[in-house]
Image 1: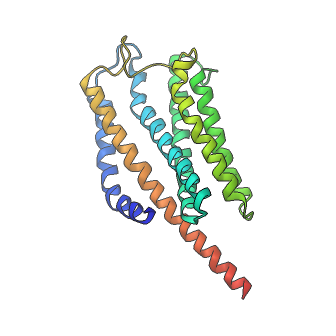
Image 2: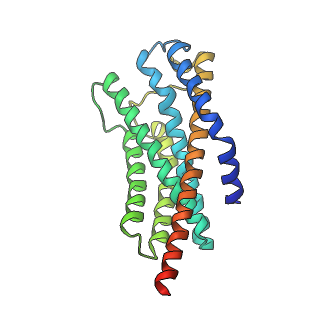
Image 3: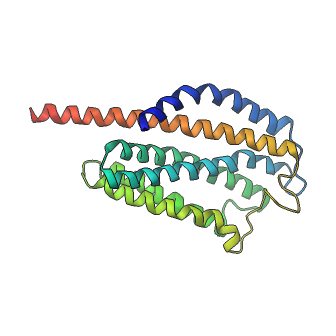
Length: 230
């Protein structure tokens, strides 16, 4: 299953990333109108929102793969989870970076104690802990199990991050379905959808590449272990 998915992603995703990325940039800077409430700074949301969405997707894949690993103990599921966390952390960091840039422009501060920002930071820290565990406990045979538990805990936290703006008081802007503005022009919707497509193709491509790297590294470790045993 994982092999087939990986092959199809490596076949379909690479040709899509560059043309969709160029189309996204052209739409953001030359086509979409300026949002009436947030002004020019709103344009960063065409990449901020998709980055956050695909990081949730990657972390969700990590959580599901970790459950499968704990049930089967198959290394492929562990590699799939590890690859998903590695890629997801990149997009989560992009989310924090683009959000901070916008916040500095709109609020005059790089960071606040807002509920959405705080819950997202907790999510980032959980998966950062996952990667640190994989690095520093690399030779511990229990590390994949502990990492799987961390990935599942992080995945469970995703709905809390998404619902934070509804469950708690927040100053985080609501760009979509905002009666006072936001994404209310068809051109904005199309630009956002193109950006979603770019990020989806990119996250899947990077996941497949990272998975291939981890598989090769795992096989090399087995060969090295067999050579040392001999």
